[in-house]
Length: 457
Image (cartoon, rainbow, N blue to C red):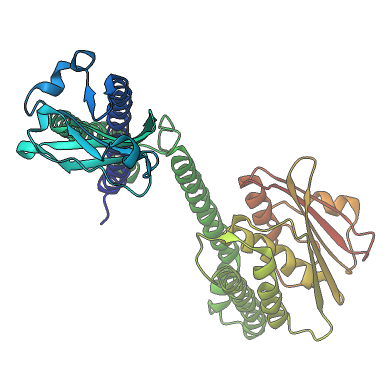
């Protein structure tokens, strides 16, 4: 069984870890760039000061030390320079006697710095310096008094890199602590939220024991649709159970009379004429019992295809129901036509709607001469499902239409039935908060049944 808490923790952990690694990489690159630009700008200023401090004589070039930072005179101070001077015009060496000259800062203690580069200026990082120091070296080219001057200025980055490394570890430590705190906080919040599910679970146990009818809807909005659908299913189950009990009561009531007559017919009173009449009466009542059984079997066959918890899909279910009804009535000329709006997809519980349409279409097939029409569409004004079922039978008078939904009343004894189908349909429509009415069909001339059902069932 999968744990929602573990799945959320894994998801949050991956997200936080990705965010943390991204921040670490950005912070590492940013601090390196900031330190490099800061030190490089300082080295550029020092290089200009060194050039300004140069004094050119007839035979040599010297540095005026007072104009430079004393740190360049301290051995291994971490601040170094190297200067390479050469004539601007190589033929001028014979005129002035000035040769190529290299000057190193006293702080280098005869250690060399890189002075040759194909393209200047250039910045070199992590250059090995004296006593294992890590240097950043800036090499630039200048021109003074007919000479090309190449200057490399360097600074020890070991201390700054150590501080940067310390900052990185502090950042990692804070990130790890924050990561663990976020996971712990998420677990605490989830467990508090799941207490609402514990409450709903206890309510389900109360429903099972009969102490409670429905779940409380005072729950977080994320699980409210689930609780609402569960309560809706519970209400349908309760009303369906009540309807099943009514159906059993109706069946028992319908069987009571023929059984009583049947028992009376089986009593032997010694009268031969009475025996013949009782035999006919017994046969008639047995036929009525058989019709009742056939009716219930037909209802079970029409509602018994598939899972009863499914939603009713008219485009798929009604053609199958039509085939069942044609087989039940066995009339070659009987035609059942369906006109279903494409906007109508699913509505109601499958078992309830199959019983509703099964009773109505079965009743229409009994009365129809050859044609039954079923139309289903959606009213855009009130968002209701409109159902219209009509046949080309004899039709009824206004007084007969008023009595159609009264339980047990039949208007034509020549047609098999016991007057309970339309009453059951009325109960189903009432269960869903709809309305049902009867009129005379203007298209086919027979009975017209009009039903309105809410689309959000």
